[in-house]
Amino acid sequence: MNESIPVSRTTDHGTARLMPDVDRERAWLLTVDGAPQSYVDLDDPAYLEFEYARRLGHVLDTVAEAGRALDVVHLGGGALTLPRYVAATRPGSRQDVVEADRGLLELVTEQLPLPAGSGIALHAADARDWLRTAPDDRADVLIADVFGGSRVPAHLTTLAYVRTAERVLRPDGVYLANLADAAPFGFLRSQLATLSAVFEEVALIAEPAVLRGRRFGNVVVAASHRPLDTAALARRTAADAFPARVEHGAAVRRFTGSARPVEDADAVPSPEPPDGAFGIG
Image 1: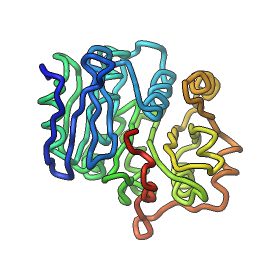
Image 2: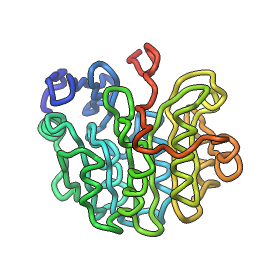
Image 3: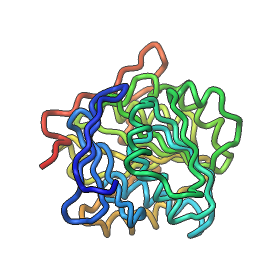
Image 4: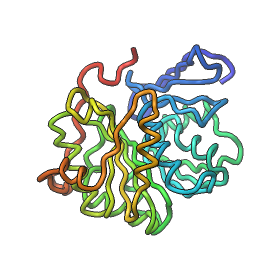
């Protein structure tokens, strides 16, 4: 974008708006139907503004040695914040971005173009449909950050979906998801139970106030068949401007409690956020 002026467009699934950040010369906020969705600094793609994005970034930083190229699948595109981050911090990575809203992809790539040779391939498709046709062992990391409006779609919460995602991952791959919930955490607990039925290791990252049930908020979950570097994650998340806790092992099992894995027939979207939960101040 040559001029720092807002751009609005009606896309396939809502009204998208790109707004410049007055404090950073080529940084942009993407909202969809008024809800903040992504933030991108074109001059500094390793800069992650949103707290949940930084936590996903911390996991990405610790899944392999620094700078090593990875194969990454992103379910949900937004403004391509995390694909740009991986391209900047792990040059040579091959990435697939799956976004159901073709109009949103067109807006973002037109107004906030990817650098040449980014290694990022874009797919306008439903996330679960795309996974069904993806080859086995395709990815080192799979990141699910899919919201229909402000809710995770029901068909991306189930045991069958997680098993499909696990098939696309390599044996030592890591599944990541951005979820949102509040006390009594019925949705989050069911998602932890679903992931635990497929993966041996499950961890969650969230602000203490969210885990204590004081407010609605984002929770990043990570799952794999190999131990996660939770010590490194804990150090990184504790050092953030808004510190978060890392829970794993027995703590996650206690938090999950008696929740059961979600079957397709019983799936529901994540809860509707309360008014103002993700608003722009």
